[in-house]
Amino acid sequence: MIQDLEQEALSAVRRIFPEAMPEGLVERPWRYLEAVRNMEQCSRCGSVVSCPLKPRGYRSEIFHEEWGTRSADVYVVRTCACKFSLAATTQADMERLVSAARVPQQLRRCTFANFQTGNHRSLRRALAMAQSAAEYGLSLVLSGPVGVGKSHLAAAVVNYRLTKGRPGIFVDVQRIMVDLRDSIRREQYAETLSAIQDAECLVLDDLGAECRTDWGADQVSSIVHHRVHHERQTVITTNLGSLEKLAAYLQGDTGARVASRLMALCEWVEIAADTPDYRGQIARQRKIPAPQAS
Image (cartoon, rainbow, N blue to C red; front, side, top):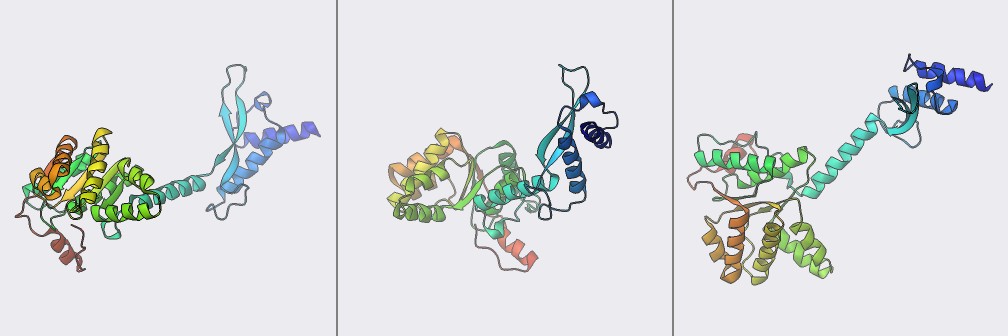
């Protein structure tokens, strides 16, 4: 009976590895038979949902290996995830990345490929610098008037990272202030601030719009100082035309410190004021209302 089972196992293995020899079968015979059945069932399966195996999405599989301690090749059985399970895991990971990134819905379609520069030199430079930031982890300040595409490029940096499975966070400064104030009420201020400070890549959209209070300026200063000190990639959009204007807007010593730290961390990229209204142009082409992001 045992010999019959061993012969059956050898025949099953040889359906996959015709060259298999009896001395190469180092597992119990039933393990090989189960693995072959699993592999055959898996070949007819169309998704994890319809998987008949337990645990769902995992199967026994036979692998051909060379063991230096044996004179013959061996065939071992291991449990591994099927291709559908791997794809589902990858998709779930991507969905978690996208959710954590917090990119607004209207900016999730923003890419470098669909950013239109026309013949405007400052837009072409801004696009090139944003692409370099996405690829090499550089930090930027994208400065310019409302509607010239700053938020599009900043979102494209995060969206590009997501396609590579790399995390990033996109959040406007006003939203950060709301989150931080709310975290104080929930007694989670330290955790919320740390998540912003330590993000692998952080986009601060519309810096200068919500820092008129000393408290708001202090929060921005704390975030920027931490990210400069730890060399975290930071991309900032602002309609303030220079570091000096940013320092004046924030006022006092705090403004000067933020401006100085930004100079150390970021490449300042100015989009010219005579650039046409990028947001309005895109909206007209799509025949939809223009989004409100800067």
